[in-house]
Image 1: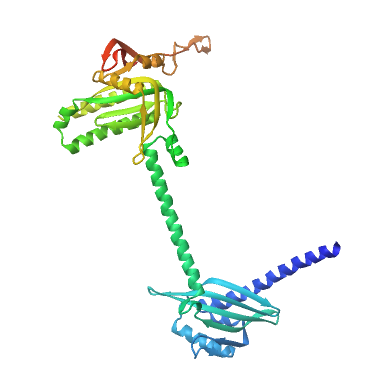
Image 2: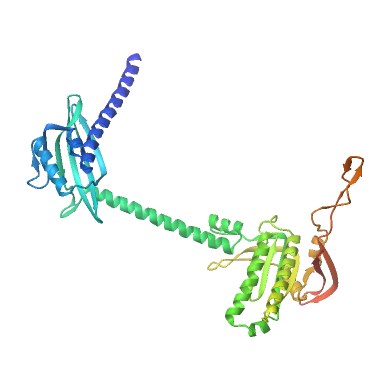
Length: 421
């Protein structure tokens, strides 16, 4: 057991020693080649043996002594004295006793006065351990070729370069696909509720759901046809867009889901797809804020002598079914008698008012605003005693309309609602 353990330790030491030798060879390799790129001949030839030999591709590229090889190098420096870059594409190191050699393909990149050249070369460098250090004893430079099939050649470095190019293309294509995917997801989130869009992205389908406590709001502009006759098509669309953008901001702030616009009608719903996102009171508050916006807008346009819309709003609460219709152009919609009744609340309402059903009234009549304090503090001697009491006040006031005839619904209880001043 001891001998086995000792053998294992010895193997580890041997591996570590081998790595150290390769590191020393690589250090000499880098000194030899990178100093040449820097045009520093003194450093380059400090690691060369006196009997170094060199063979290049051309017939005149021969040297059999350190002096001859240096003279050849210095002539090259005279012709091109500027530093350049040697960029290895791959590099192998081999060690056999006191001899080692490196093989690599590299780009020699020369840039001067706006001109860039890029040459692909192979360097084979042989080293020998002399006087306790690695010295370069032979250098061979060539233009690398590997035969792929008869009559067809491609350098190993070119293969690597091509692979890198393809990797770059794949990375760019992946980036484009991810960007397109995000754009599609953002578009989906713009037309569908977040929960529904996520379900569709995760599973490819979205199942319609029943909601028992939805509150639906409809708006419609009175005199739209008359106003449209006084505006150009561009002005008409711009005014509709101005109003509907304001409505979008109002309902978004209150967690209400926009369903659609149809001509000059606007439809939204509270309490779905997340039942906790908004309450019936939120929908009523939103309706009152929409009417306040339309009043301010009318005053502004009246001052300019321009036509303005006036609006009816109707609200009803009850059960609905919600889901996606269509496969070409997704649309989130709601169905049920509650939708029809909400529409009748709007058409049976009056301009400037918010008309709500009995069902909605029952849900919001107890709504209060945040507690306030009443009563002054009492002073007893040097003590101040807080005698204030918490109180609440209703958020809305209601005007009963009694039973009002609604198309297709007979007579329905209705209420106008205002915000408590």
